[in-house]
Amino acid sequence: WQYEGKLLLLLTSAHLLCSPFSWCCQLVECKLYRGGPPATIVTIDEESPNGTILVENMQINGRVQNPEQTISLTLLRNYDYWVILDPVLQRLYLNSTGRVLDRDPPNSITSIGVDVQCTNEKVGIVIVHEVRILVRDKNDNSPQFQQSSYYVAVNELSPIGTTIFTGFSGNNGAIDIDDGPNGQIEYAIQYNPNDPLSNRTVRVASALSGNIILAERLNYEERTRYFIIVQANDRAPYLPNQRTATTTLTLDVLDGDDLGPMFLPCVLVSNTRDCIPVFYRVVIPELTDFRGCLGSWLNGRISKASSYHLSNT
Ligand SMILES: *[C@@H]1O[C@H](CO)[C@@H](O)[C@H](O)[C@H]1NC(C)=O
Ligand SMILES: *[C@@H]1O[C@H](CO)[C@@H](O)[C@H](O)[C@H]1NC(C)=O
Ligand SMILES: *[C@@H]1O[C@H](CO)[C@@H](O)[C@H](O)[C@H]1NC(C)=O
Image (cartoon, rainbow, N blue to C red; front, top):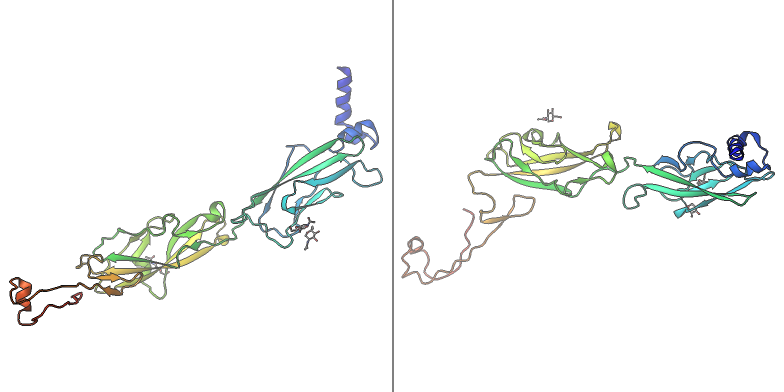
């Protein structure tokens, strides 16, 4: 018991008292002289430049240089050579020579782990110190809309408050590959100088979903088309860091007297109001015996079976 007590006393004061060659000193070599958790954990920003200091000093007991070398340090588990060790200064640097430390897809480097192995040159004991480098997200990506533009057709009779557009749901709206708030999207309607009324005609029902509702009654007889600018911004906590993207939502007003676009005898060309006429082929047999109303209307006009195109009107 007495012996163990003395040993403990010697060990705790060893660094202050001993000479490099004494027995006690040889046992503290390679150990950390700092307190705290055994692993060294540091954080750096993604895209940090080459040579960024990761760990100022590993705080390992010992000397790597002659004269009086007591330890040697090597880097293990240095996958992809992201880390450079300066053994004399016990310093770790980032090696991003010719590449970017990118936290976002597709690289997705969120942390780097290496080990600093220390060999006690006097007694041959090896101690491995784990270093964990956490890569902090930088808001380096802007939201991106998945489509270059969006389209919606709305019946002019739709009441105010009707949800007219949910086209940003799923992953069809804007996507930002940054992490956390830097990658979260909010939508807002922007003023369109080329269509000054567009921003008051609709509004965003909820910034997160980007669902759009009608804010004013539409009138087909006055306006048949609006160009609405929708902005997506990420939610970077510091506003000047926020990044944005915009898209145009084309809103076509449908005439409320009609049954709706599905029943018109034409097919809407996507994203336009142009119609491809639908051709109905009518085969009319000999008209002389025909007794129906179509027959009486056609009577005297046509004498022989044929085919006709029925137009919209
Ligand atoms: C990258 O940084 C390391 C560590 O500071 C340095 O040794 C190396 O020369 C740098 N590479 C370039 C290309 O600057
Ligand atoms: C730095 O990284 C580059 C690219 O992976 C590698 O070729 C080079 O050997 C590394 N440099 C050091 C000193 O590890
Ligand atoms: C539309 O944008 C203009 C210009 O920014 C603004 O003055 C107006 O208040 C906006 N209207 C609505 C309803 O937000």
